[in-house]
Image 1 (cartoon, rainbow, N blue to C red):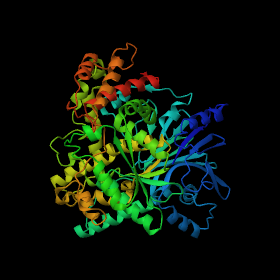
Image 2: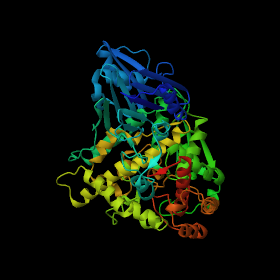
Image 3: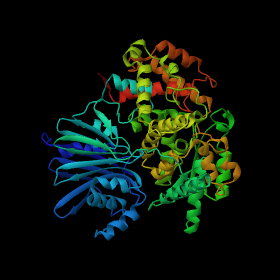
Image 4: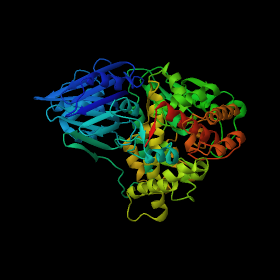
Length: 612
């Protein structure tokens, strides 16, 4: 994985273009700590920061390729999992390869097929190719949006980067936030509307889109979307196909020239990945795969079961690791570092985020990086197969199911902010936009139509929030995390599988559980879903209470004009372990609501946000 930046300007190029581009790339050193590279030609300037995973010598970027007299230059962030398949096709077409990197395969795929190359790719990617003959820039992003790509355009100048911070470092760009940006933060956040970068003028190339940039301007086009059709396979055939797709996706993502591990929670998804990876390692006579888990100081004493977290992970992690024979290590986070990392997590994401859910992954990633460069994670299985509680409690409608208690949040906001952003209207608008996009299927019965909507919301509005978290927190530590359940072939297939099949035995991810029969102990295979672990130590509440009270006691705190200070203070002083205020997803409750306000205050100050 890497970080990419670029600047195309057809009329107003700066004399210190190289200095500015290097400053942009320097903001992404964490994404690519191993090497840097730059390329300049006429109106275009490209920069790259590299994390070496495959072919250290042959994968250097920016990479230049030619066909006849045409010259193409590429910067790329991602991994292709079918690069060898594409390489073989290109060899038959007369192409020659200097190394074995997927970067070289991708560049020559673009040279051969142009924009149509995106249809041939299986992987996670964000890349840009400058066509020197046409003086045109092409950009593309993977189908599910695993890898980020942001851009800014004004007049004849166009900027792009893997992260917002790199664009903000350009002297032409300021950290302005409009009413809409405030609504994204205070109403929708930590989720984000697809395509929105929150900061005024900064946008995101949407998943499954590509873009052309030339003197005429910018033009984006969707090249991939979910397509609804009748599912023709029998249940037995469906189970077999899911198994084949899952196994193939995992095995493809084991390719690495650097140390690789899996993140193991003892749940279905991470355990299945570890099982398939362990078998592949045994078949290749490799040393047992390394596995890592996360826990918190004091959780063995303070853990309390809840409707969302029925049991602790630690005993299950031990059972799976011993069953599969992995080389396992556990990382324990204490409250002080968890609270302190709330601020580093904002910088990693460039926005307020999922508070300690973010900061814990950031700390975990830093720890893993000392022992591995690549990790494989079970993210996205819940969105693809239906693992969340809201798939089984569909009574609340007409809003995003992971954010059903907007009133909890708005009770802490200042009247002036509420009048400005109109949170209920904003959420309703964004929700309706998502519902209007659903690729419906004529003939769907009521429950099937409803579940199609729900899966679409999860795949296009909820999953991106978790993918943002996964990418920014891991890459902030220079760790590459891969997500096999995001393989587009698996997503496309399961999308059209009827709910009755997905809901086998009336269990969350029942279809997936059945498809994985035989690779794990039965009790692990059918363990009730337990989400990403969080701290149950009451000291975390005290830490958050202290942070928010210090903000309230400082008249210079930038968040003060936006909040009902008395209401926030009362919540902070009354906060207890059993204060039940679920406001976002499964893990974000009352302590996380106050921590989110702490992150907003830090973000406003650290990024010198200008409200306009």
